[in-house]
Amino acid sequence: MPQTKRDYYEVLGVDRQATPAELKRAYRGLAMRYHPDRNPGDHQAEDNFKEIGEAYQVLSDPDRRQRYDAFGHSGEAMGGGAGFNFQSAFDLFDMFFAGGASAQRRRGGPRRGSDLQLQVTIDFEDAIRGVTRTFEINRHTPCPECGGTGAKAGTGAVTCPDCGGQGQVQRARQTLLGQMVTVEACPRCQGEGQMIESPCPQCRGQGLVESPKELEVQIPPGVDNEMRVRVPAEGAAGPRGGPPGDLYLLITVRPHEELQRRGMTIVYECPITFSQAALGDTIVVPTVDGPVPMVVKAGSQYGQQVRLPGKGAPDPRTGRRGDQVVRLRVVIPTRLTEHERALLQELSPPDGKPHPVRKGFFENLKDAIGL
Image (tube, rainbow, N blue to C red; front, top):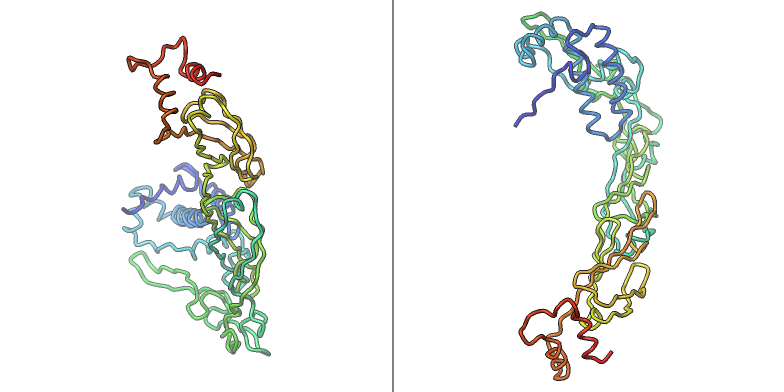
């Protein structure tokens, strides 16, 4: 189902009686906030930037605004308005901020490299305590032959003859409303504004080559399944000397044989015997810090929980540790000796009904055992 467009006045945050000056002021503020150069890698900001550019392009034109006020978004199709693209959003931005980052982008300025992602599997204990791991990654780095320029030694980039170094060209077409002029990326230089006439033989004009690197990374305590650990500036190098992207480690944690994790809480399903539940005991339970003693109170019930403070998982941001919860699971024996059977039969009421509250089951058990 196609997504419904938002009202252009709503996009810019103005009312329908807004003056051209108010429209311009609203557009300037929003364009600065959502410009992709200020929000690298944020696809939502990029979509917002395109949306506010489209809204301003329509409302700043008196004829198009009149059609929009009368017919809404369908008025654009009726008027044969020029299509909107991301490049025209930068064109609008440059009208107000000439010489800004977008103009540099079109004229072959340095661009940030791509982010990389690496799948990493670690043990349960390492996820709780943190661990240092060493990886070998293949990524694009500046070509050593040309220093990242992409040009053969002794040569350099030249200005594109088609766009004169602007990275964009204008196309005019005749419509019923007159001549319409659109701006698009120069097809010859792909919007760079410059061309490599003599490419570097090693990188074939790309300025980048793929090379391996051994990287030591500290994975912080408290990471969990499907969390991402960001390693700044360890992604691919940017073209034409641009800054590198980031490396993201996508974490997978191997399951533990006995322990389970629920956020910052670690859960242990602890089997105990019938007599331990009835009489109480001190047992040893596993934790990520090693085995610890724990008191089982007399009369403990099936499913009862005992909390061990500070034995859970740490918060990766604050380092504060959660708790470990021990759930008691009373194991009912399937094979009894004659003596055990006799003791249990002695505890059973003759009518098959539960013991009265005035003398509980565990008191009867103690009397039978002689405690």
